[in-house]
Length: 193
Image (cartoon, rainbow, N blue to C red):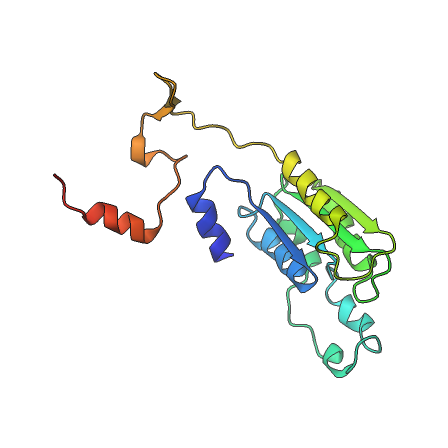
């Protein structure tokens, strides 16, 4: 979350879409719920988003079964869904033949988002198992989500007196990217001529 916040501060006009698969999808969902100002969109692939139910499903399907019987100490995306920003867009995709994370674990989360008014695209990919992150339909869903995000407005402080836009605030403009620390330190410490 700290890395996303740093990138968001540096590239203020950029839209941020996080993509996760499996446990990574659950983490992205929790970040969206706990830090609603960080993400504009999320693509969750094979998400075990009903986290307390998923470990109860796994014993007998994975060997050894003992780790699946341990208490889940992770955050449950269904419990953090209430904190998601209302303008976030979400795409959830699951393989129709996925035995590791069946679509039902993502469906309940998709329903929770839809009930909150979050624009949600839930799809079950027929004849697909797990490991579908690089599936063309997943890539297309990410493209659709990115295209549906509204553009951030241009800086209201910009004025154009020539063919090039010029900001009246120059270096202090809120729409300019913040330079990395090393570059910022070098620029501020170099001697003036």
